[in-house]
Length: 142
Image (cartoon, rainbow, N blue to C red; front, side, top):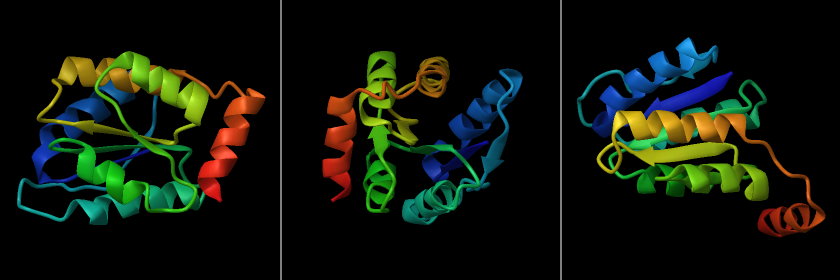
């Protein structure tokens, strides 16, 4: 199950991404927002991170205008490793090397087709389990 949330600046991309992911067989837990009315992105970042830290969802996707605010809010939560990605290489590397569990993207930075490819790459990649990466992730959690 993928937790997915956005602010008002990314609602169109969120809805398109959910449809894309459903076609690929993923189940999504859409935590909102559901309107273009101005809202506070940390609320939705915390809804997604709560689902991950509780174990209800394994991975999450957060969207806002730039992806920056969402990544900052998500990374404040213990056990969350959120990565802001605008390309497929970064999406793959952050899963393999950082064991990232939240993908953040900016709806005003990338278009839907690139967002779909980045999300697919992130969701299909896995953690390498290399000792050096495990050691580095442990240092992040101290």
